[in-house]
Each structure stands twice: as C-alpha cells, then as structure tokens.
Image (cartoon, rainbow, N blue to C red; front, side, top):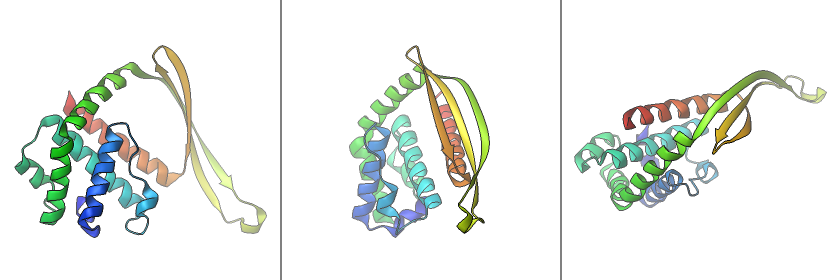
Length: 176
C-alpha cells in the first residue's frame, strides 16, 4: 500500500511523512482533506497507518537503512529516500514519543464498553437513504477518573477503526 506514495511529488511526500511523525509525537497529524484529490478515504487510512507503523517499528527498533529500504521496496528511489530522510531526522522524537505513549497507554484502562446498532433514516423526500450506524460507548479510567467516550460511526468508519486497532495491536505486540 505504501506504493501509493509514488502518486505524490517527492516534496509532498516529505511533508506527509513529517506530518505523520507529528501525529505520532502528539502534534497535529496530516489532514485527509489535503489529499482528497490523490486518494480515497480507504487508501488514505491505509497509507497513513502503514507509514505510522513503519515509523514506529523503524524508530522503536532502531532499524538499519537497508531494513527500511526493504519495507519501502514499492516506492521509487527518490520517494524511499525521502521517507528514510524523515526517519533519520526524527528518529529520536519517534523513540521519545513511543516511550511516552507506552507510559500513557498503561495509565488509561478500558473499564467497560457497550454498543448499539442504529438505522439512520432520512426525510421522506429521499426515503431510500438508510445507513446503519454503530454507537460505541467506552468507559475509560485515566488517572483515577472515569471518562465516558461515545463514538457513532458508519460501516466505513467502523472498518477503519478496526484496521487501526489491528495495526495498533501488532505494534504493541512487537514492543513487548
């Protein structure tokens, strides 16, 4: 999926990679709206998740340039060099963010969850619009306080959430 980066000019690829690292470090991540002409929403999520995972694994494992190049084999040489340059320049930030995230993850605990399936109906003018929605309610205990978090998502957003959670699980398993 990372091969889709070849659709961007190298300078835009650099910007995107830096923004992905920014997101990993707790700053503003890249915005989907900036890339709507380049990729679909599903492609966008796959590309940004793949990049984030690559940066996390490479930064956390202190991988060699050759190992990173193997992971970026789908990219042109200029694009893979751009990704590698971002990794080299920001490796310490990535490692620091991963250490901080591990500490934050251990302090936030999912206490309980509940879900409901709803059907969103439109007005009578367009009665054929029926969208199933999932309402996910999470009770998260963080720093001793219980915080309710409610998410409402359609099928596409749910698939994206599941994909993100699977990627996160893989990263956490590799960090152990």
